[in-house]
Image 1 (tube, one colour):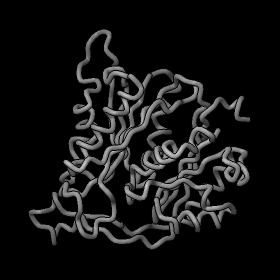
Image 2 (cartoon, one colour):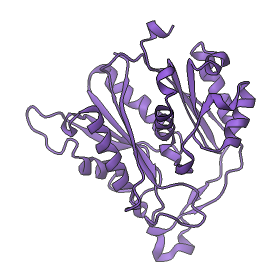
Image 3 (spheres, rainbow, N blue to C red):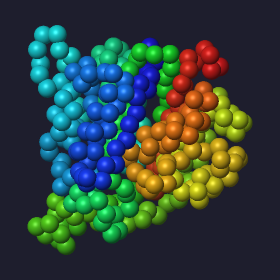
Image 4 (cartoon, helix red, strand yellow):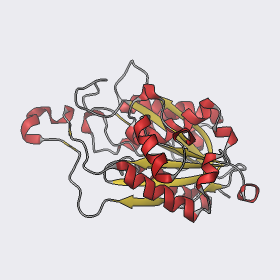
Length: 301
């Protein structure tokens, strides 16, 4: 059966700067929305990039899995569960959705819980020069429901090798490496990459710009900035009002942006009017677009 989004949640509580805390709270809220118990979840994927203390082992997914209470005991009658990190910059969550679908489609997994979000490794809420906002996000997927599922993932990348935009300068950080992160702006224009990914997705799914203009198809942008939406709309041939972005109060949620944009569309009421949702992610090196049919394909088409 096609994959369905059962619930989505974000958390940006100000009492903590820990990605582990925020992702756990978002995941717990997601399960509560769907009335799904943690021990029913068979897969947890973490797509967050920047994490507490630059931890790399154990996997961040395992730490969040333990906090949420997913598959902590293997016993007869219990759902076996596993978790892993899938990091691919801003596009990680969309790749995680496509990966989870492979398991949901075969029935190996009944519920897949995906989390994303970022924080400065110091876990301080505001650090000068760090461009991403602190938040956690979660989305719960299942093969139960009436949705038409997701389409093919469309990706576009810059040609040739790309210089890093975030790294830990060990020489400068010294013993403070676990709390340090250096960043720089990317060189490529994300609008150009985003436009290519959206065009490829529209063509593959048999959609046109008119579908977005009249609201049948909803394009979710990975940023709140009006400049990005205006330039993307101009490149694609429709109005900026046709694109829903992230709530301005969130600033730049990076890996969690798809969930923030999805909830922004839901809260504004435009999500319920659309048959198809296009999830878009973009940074300076790549862009990804993924379609989601909120109703059965037979009804949509």
